[in-house]
Length: 501
Image 1 (spheres, rainbow, N blue to C red):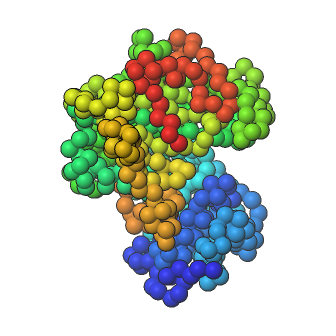
Image 2 (image 1 turned 60 degrees about the vertical axis):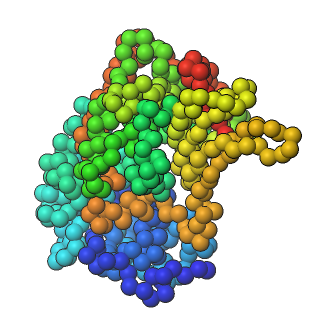
Image 3 (image 1 turned 180 degrees about the vertical axis):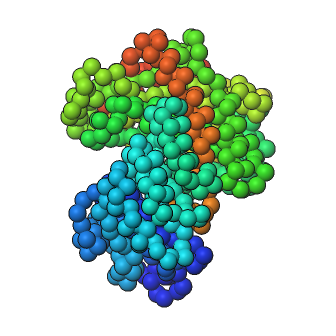
């Protein structure tokens, strides 16, 4: 088994970043699948200060020993053998404690205050629970005097169902925590490739000078899920793909692509520029609602050669549901940098592949001198892949080799695959980076309240338009790339979805 630097005796993380982490929902899927593995990796890599403590809170009866065993079992299931070593694992598990707690009742919160008593470390409250009880938990922590002026809170999306509910939830959190100590997670912002998008744009004149409507013809953002609803019917049928994916993940990616250069890398400088993009997004009104937006719902089909049910045939389904499992749209950022440049967004469940990528299509040369039948390929593309393998590729055109080829063009990538380029480096999971920034008290990877509210305003007008025009979702077979209308939407502009997967 490989040994991390920290496990061989090097000092652990900066003691100034030590925290007491109170993890609400510690027995849930997110905690076991993502949060504890991320925390373990931070510890193993020597990034977690020695005095950091972690309290798991949930409604079920456990003691510290049984809780540690559950976390250990989850880690054994999800970690590669090369990522495990006995010393790191023992050190990490020793940090864990457990408290059974009824989150909705103030009784019992005094035990958190007792756990915190005399601690010099700031407390980080991680709410891996449903958003409707965020306010209760925050108020009970305050009433029990478990918090101080350095305490921070981390909240998961979705924050609300629409603008009104989002405002209510954020108001409740804001009664206890100031905005400077609220960390709203969108895990896409913690991905290595998304971080590289900022470096790519603002550190390289090659791209920085080209990043505008004079040089870019259009942009694609695709977030495709191979799975169906995976037993989440109760939540998903109330939300739908627009609320679940577009309102947060896709709009955050769009903001990072479209924003102007921030004055510096401070959290608010970056988030100010993202808000400007959200304010400039064109709404869908009139004919645009039917022409530039496609919503779909999957029917029975095949995935990996196996038959899978349609959305209305899933366990517990409402057979009359009009909830969308797919959304494709063409939108525009109405400002000087992007005027006239369409942004094509596409996301859905039961797609052929699990795929998250951004494709920047650069304009063709104004004067073309090569074979007329190759004019369709004569442009550069920047492909930014977030999953399944993170990487960046720039498609360029070169002469095809061979004496018989003449001046025939051949597209090919200049490719940076993170796994290949850094074979000895493990690409950290997004939650590792996000948790580390919380420990440091840095907010630049987290979403500010006004970002969420502007995103909800834009999505709400689209949802209202669907309701007023009575636009049911179009059907598409599971295992396909969505309704035919989503292909027609981009084809009518003389373009096609990039599909060199």
